[in-house]
Length: 395
Image 1 (tube, rainbow, N blue to C red):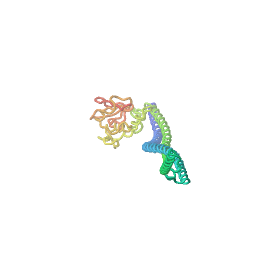
Image 2: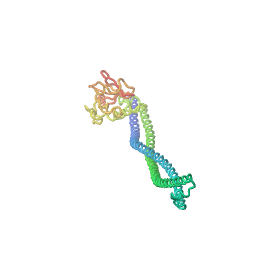
Image 3: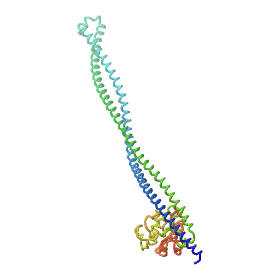
Image 4: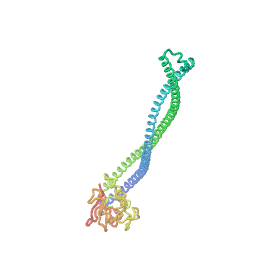
C-alpha cells in the first residue's frame, strides 16, 4: 500500500471523525434550540388561546353591553320624558297657584260686597210697600225706589251665588293644586332615582370593559415578548443549521464517498435547507422522524401515528406534519391532491393504485430507497414512467 494511499485513508478517517464530532456538537446545539423553540411555541400557543378566550369573552360581553346600552338609552329616554313631564307639571302648578290667587281675590271681593249690602239693609231697615208709597214724591220716584229695591235684592242673590261658586272653585282648585304638588314630588323623586341608575349603569359598563381589555392587553404583551424570544431562537437555529449545512458541504469528496455521496446525518437524516420555506424544512424534519422506520403495508393509513409506513402512509405523514394534509391519503387519493405538475420545492409522483413517492428540495423520499439503503432518503432515482406529478400550492 503506497504512502499516498495511507495519507488518503488517514484523511478520510480524520475527515469522518471531524464530521462526526462536528455533527455531534451541532446536533446537541440544534436539539437544545429546538427544545427551547418548542417550549416558546407552547407558551405562545397558550397565550394565543388565552387571547382568543379573552376575545371571545369580550365578544360575548359586547353583546351584553349592547343590550345594556339599549336599556340605558331606554332609561335615558324615559328620564327625558319624565323631565319634560315635570316641566309641564311645574308650569301647570304655577298657573294653578296664580288662578287660585285670582279666585281667592274674587271671593274676597264678593264677600265684601255681600257684607256691604247686608250692612246697608240692616242699618236702613227692610222697607215695606206702604213705607215706599208714603215716602215717594210722585209716581216716577215711586218707580225708581221700587226698581232700586228690586235691583239690590237681585244683586244680593247674585252675590250669594257667586260667593258659593267661588268657594267651590277655590276648594276644587286647592285640591288640584295639591295633586299637582304631589305629582311634582313623585316626578322629582323618580328622576333622581333614574339618574342614579344611569350613573351606576355607566360606571359598571366602563369597569367591565376596562378589566377585559386590560386582561387581553396583558396577554398580548406577554405574547409579544414570547414571539420576540421565539424569533431570536429561530434565528439562532437558522444560523446553526446554515453552519451545519456549510460544514457538511466542505467535508470533501472522499468523505462523501463513505456515505454514498448523500449529505445526510448519521442515521439517514437530511439537513434542513437554508433559505427554504418553513414548510419544506418541516417536511424534512418529519421525513427524518420516519426515514428508517420499517415498511408496513397499510401503515399510516388509519392515522398519522404508526410503527411503520407504506409508500402513501410515508408521504401522508410528511405532508401532514407540515400542515398540508388533514388526514392520510392512499395513492389513489394523491391523484387529485394539490395542483398538477412539478413544484418548485416539493413534487409528489403518483401512480394511483400502484406507488407514490415524493421529492423535497431535491431529495428523494421513497420506500423503494428504504429497501435499497435502509433510509427513505436518497439522491436521484425514483420511478417516473406512468407517474403523474403534483405539488402543494405555493411549493
